[in-house]
Amino acid sequence: MYLIVGLGNPDTEYDNTRHNMGFNAINGISEKYNIKLKKNKFQGLFEIGEIEGQKVIIVKPQTYMNLSGNCVKEIVDFYKIEKENIIIIYDDMDIEPGKIKIRKKGSSGGHNGIKSIIQMLGTDQFSRIRIGIGKPEHKGDEINYVIGPIPNEEKKLLMQGVEKAEKALIEILKNGIDIAMNKFN
Image 1 (spheres, rainbow, N blue to C red):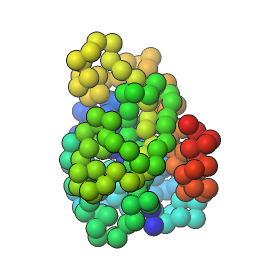
Image 2 (tube, rainbow, N blue to C red):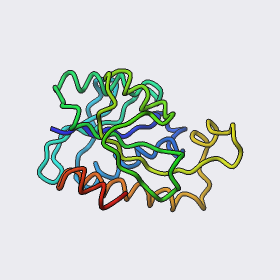
Image 3 (cartoon, rainbow, N blue to C red):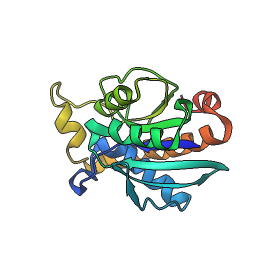
Image 4 (tube, rainbow, N blue to C red):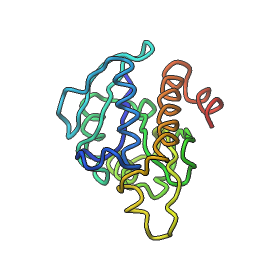
């Protein structure tokens, strides 16, 4: 069983922000595979379903970004998910908008949601699909950049990254992470 987690912030005021790219990818996947996130447990909205023949749990933590690890840890412990079957989808300022990167493991890269997950799981050995959001124009403006509204002219480019992340997830589930990395990185 795979655990697929999209990171974001739960309130509607964050819907149109760069920090919610992980939520956007989960929304697209759940719609495409008709998996409605109806259960509210483990500090997250989740559902169990099937994607490309693989049993999955899809989750949107409701803890706010900085505490995402709380939700992930509860689900991992309850369902006994193997670390190599965890896939986290999230925004990344070090990648250009419209692009993605897949990694098998690694540091948080300064992302507080990933930092929280690494801390709670006690490992960085889990897969990630990073959706590029680019950097703010001015250094020191990172917080406003990730949780501020997205200008209309940028939305289309960001959604291209979300769509690539959805395709990358399907590729991982069908053919494994190494093939997905070769195809998308």
